[in-house]
Image (tube, rainbow, N blue to C red):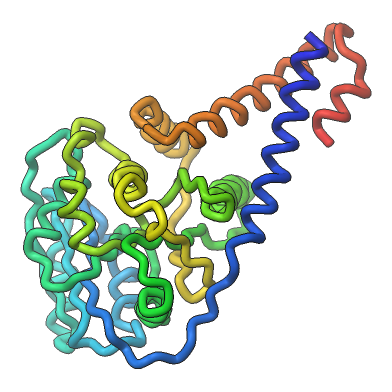
Length: 317
């Protein structure tokens, strides 16, 4: 038993060291001042998001980018509240913004994937950006993306997402947890084994979406509009799926309100993991699960005096 505990801990420590190296290996992109060249279609699926949409829409209106070279497509998934009315009123008062609302065309078991597919079909521009209705985007979002595209020539760009700092312990717990996922995401790219991304800030060419047949093959799984698409992209364009490490690209999203909401979110995330094709991602997941099991079992073993307390302290350290 002691051998297993120490072996798992040792392997986990190696993983963390590798991730630190990978994180540092992805350099911060400052973005030179370039003449705007690229055009963007921003896709936002929503359902009953009246309480969140005002903040998102306001942040979109503050984008520091020529208004005639990006569009905002909001996809309504049968909302029962006044979300559509709210967007319509906003559109009336912000006529310089190219905003359209379409209805989701359900064809699969995944409403969000259907919504994105529906919007891609009517989008005007070459670059697709996806975010969520409960997000706030930075005002230099399109600027930094345009500079990154011109400089790095990617096909898909994975961008950072975080929660805002809060005074509550529960929300800051989620922030710390979420930052660990973001760090692992960056580290994966740094060691040339990307395995995570987030649909709240994901960018790709329409050509890529069509080339990989969108979400065909995993549209029976409700979630995973981000990672499954990235896995497909990596098979065709392994060197052109890149991470944009920049504060100017950082999108803020909202943490879960209750413990039950958090559990349900993690259940949704867990439901798709068996369909992942990324071997490295599965290996990381198994090792993290094993390390958590070691911590819990070590506490229990220490309580019944089957394990020396110094070993427990070593594991926590």
